[in-house]
Image 1: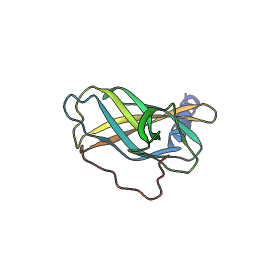
Image 2: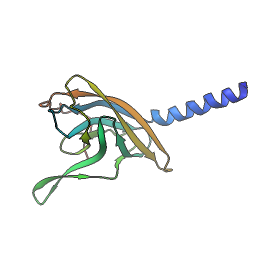
Image 3: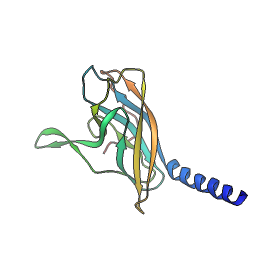
Image 4: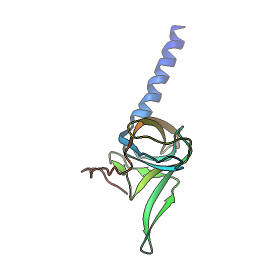
Amino acid sequence: MTRTLFALLAAGLFSTSALAQVTVTEPWVRATVPQQKSAGAFMHVQSTASTRLVGVSTPVAGRAELHEMAMENNTMRMRQVDGIDLPAGKPVNLASGGYHVMFFDLKRQLKEGETVPVTLVVQDSAKKRSSVTVEAQVRPLTYVAPKTAGHHGH
């Protein structure tokens, strides 16, 4: 019994160490107006090892996607991407105007001051997936994130 318990505890420690490789700071979501069906989510993500952000979900939306804003023929366009590289030790800024998260088919209005859970799925070089869930603060419709030194948008 003691050996089994030790094995379970050790397995738990290893699984949490995989999650500890990716840190998320300053997660936030833009507030919505009644009946609005989409919203953007933004944050800083950093991994200790080279990984790839490959998925996102939240219970407040029917679906969530990774997106990129990019210039195409002098027009800013938004498109879904299948993943975002997280180079080892380098912060990646998910922000307006670059890579970011989009929520679609919102189930309710997102009101300033509340928090919503956002789960990020990352995949390492061995194709092993792990997830980390953060609480994103809902900020005002007019909120503009300050420029943060050391965080790079891609």
